[in-house]
Length: 176
Image 1: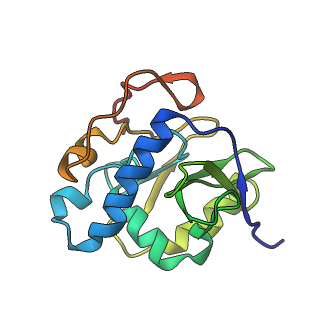
Image 2: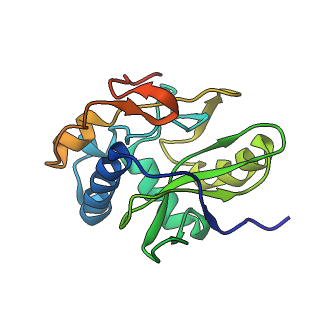
Image 3: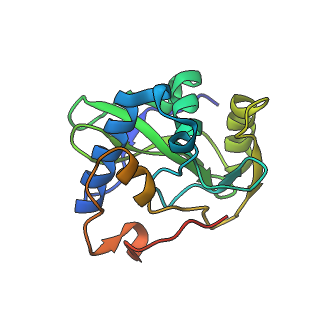
């Protein structure tokens, strides 16, 4: 079954706007960042997979590689036409794909791939032979990060206080 187009996921929040600014700064700086910064996790709370030998949350380097290797991980925002980028991936038995964000309007987006197994089969080859190979999954859960260290390294402000995605606090820590 073909991979879907980017679709609107839900209303945007102040945290989505902040995450878009951090990811836009990351995209602009790209792989020229130091290895220490590239190892930092991006701000997201929806990635079912762990990466690398330490089962880390999705890192700046891993997401830059994803955007470069998989044309489905980026696209046009269906709301404003801006740049849509994947910020997480995962799913349940019959539905899953890329969770993303528009870098212009900060709208949360979704790109359907298939169930969790299909997402894994799609994403695993993209990271083989890299430090960010798939090394674990949480069915119905996430390896998440608040992205505070990355935001600071990129010269971005701290995340706004208040509710985080899926009703969680903005004070999420890195889970590994």
